[in-house]
Image (cartoon, rainbow over all chains, first blue to last red; front, top):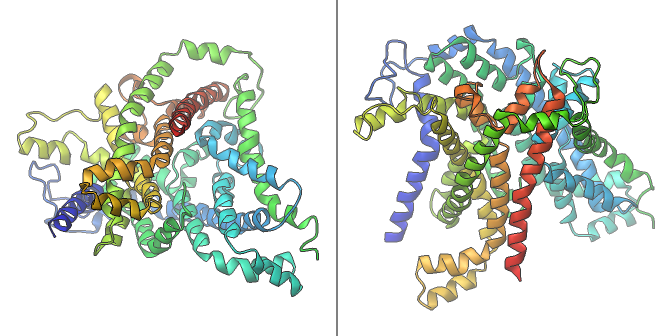
Length: 271
Length: 292
């Protein structure tokens, strides 16, 4: 009993440290213009709660446009990863072919390399393709992530061999075996791939910062940094902006967290 | 019976293969090539300039500062982010009521964008922000600490942000590993009268030893790759005189605009790769030596 109480005390302490700053930011974003946010006795509960700051973000930067841009990049990234890492992971895990080991090795090799090392030459590639300062240029390099190929490979490899054999006897070709037999068994991993592709695309900052130069093409993260750097020192406004970027991710993650933690227990999440 | 035609696997693998060749393998080779050129961000002719970018780098005070920052960054992050998440993982491992809520909540800083948490912390660490106000009210501080303007306090602030944002991520890595520690060892240790601290050292730590090394490698490489924290806490300036830049910040600066220099940025990328490989090799060596 005593141990249990101690555990909960520690859990709440860590909770305050990890989630407290978000609540403070949320509280700041709801404080009215008349409320002194710099007071030496800061209050967690807004005295004059208002949504006005959120409306003012839209006056300072084209926030709807930035949300649309971020969504477009995220949808391209999620779609690309779901389709193409499934195909590749399935082929490497379930079909025998010459060169399979080398192909798998190529995907593994990229994990050692910190992404920032190649970011410059990636930009050169994107520029030479004529995609500098475009949203497709932002999405393209992450549309098929090697890590996700390996996640799908692991998931397909874990399926028992005889499900394939039975289907082959029934005359099913590789495509039918993938769609009807294998795919329904890896839905959990697909969910993990989808959640993390979305979050990675929505949150990314450095790459869109390098690719995009026109303010009307900015993604939400780049736009927010632009808001805080250029337009305002008003912390209420910045707080509202950060909440606009954060809340969709928080809602999405809480709705889908059970897939994620199930994936962790199955050893599916490594990066 | 043949299960598939010879080209079927290649058709399925082709898009992913093209992507990995085009956006990972080729760029790593091309980074090296570019580092011997004077390529400009906006295009135009580029010439080979031999080793000039590398010799320039040796005399660049900002590069020296960035390397020093990286070493300090790693020295603080490595112990904190290797140990604290393990303790938190042990805390959330036990099936208690609401434990799923706590696990999810501890993971929230990981899923938030670096820009969101960077701006959040900028506000909290402001001269008149939450932390300075609170410390003054509790009479811990007489005057606000310049977290966002002092050469070394900026590094400390950014490290705190990195550690705070990383806790949940490495907690999950440890949580997956803790599931594989044999339960009977814990039970046997309890029977022998071992207390929780004794069990931590003689059952848990040996059980997750490989994961501790994995986390140590991930943390050190992440510390060398730091960008967003420093960029946002200094509003993109890199602190007083740009002394608080990281290597990646310098790479980003040289990637932009009319005065940018992709050749020099590539040479910096090669340096980043070399620096990042060192802790990987050292820690992998230590790990395999301990196995014998």
